Picture 1 (cartoon, rainbow, N blue to C red):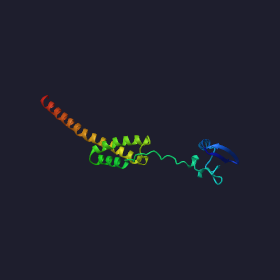
Picture 2: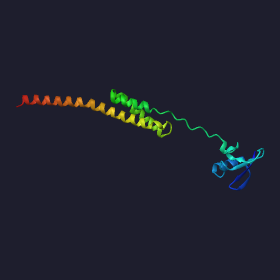
Picture 3: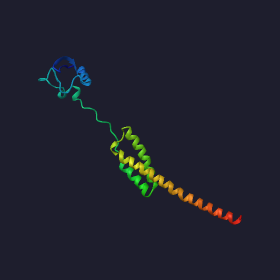
Picture 4: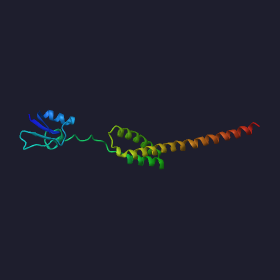
Amino acid sequence: MKQWHCHIDGQQYGPISEEQLRSWAREGRLRPSDQVWCEGMSGWAPASTVEGTVFTVTPPPPPMVRPHRGGTVLALGIIGIACCFIGGIIAWVMANNDLREMAAGRMDRSGEGSTRAGKVCGIISVALAVVGFLVPIIMALASHGMSMQHHFYRFHP
């Protein structure tokens, strides 16, 4: 096992084990610019350039996140308003799921704005569909009630 020497803030330390060297780097005691040396090296070198220090270890890749579907959600929400409220329902459900995934870090957050806009459009389309469905029913019932009232007064003076 390699024995390391370090030059940190004007002080020389060593020999220390490779495990201790890495521990110091993780703790911030050894910085990337601090000089290190071990047997077999031609001279002192910055820790960031020396194989075996924590600074030269390649960090793991960032966790994979799914791409956002903000454009799709927004398009479905607009379709819901324009012609088919089913698109609005789909947009609303997709937006809820995608926003939950974004909050958990499992989906790309760059589409959060368009996803939220698609959700709002979906909600509006569903609300318009409900109003569009209920208004004719209410009008029919009101009309039917007036005709019943007209019949009642015609027969009962």
